[in-house]
Length: 113
Image 1 (cartoon, helix red, strand yellow):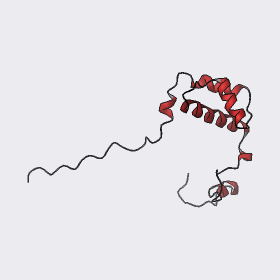
Image 2 (tube, helix red, strand yellow):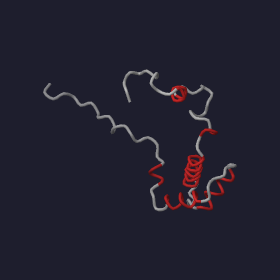
Image 3 (cartoon, helix red, strand yellow):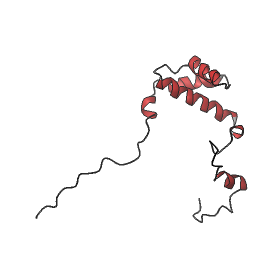
Image 4 (cartoon, one colour):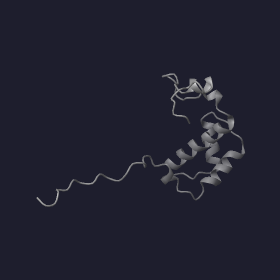
């Protein structure tokens, strides 16, 4: 967290990851992503697809999408993920934007003349 701007103190693997190859789709090659993280990503993407399609986020639906994508995940993930999503405002969570302040105030003439 230093402010020196130097990468010298960082391990070479991290420094190399700071500047991914321009044609790379991700900073980390998919082969290097741990399986548990892939399982979570499969479930997240499946949930977003199901939400967008207006379908229930259920274990069977998640499994169907993961298999259709050619993936395989630990058997407990879809059930766990479906339970986590149940009753949550996923539509609100999936909205993009959000950070900035409110609308700009209209300029008003200075009082007094």
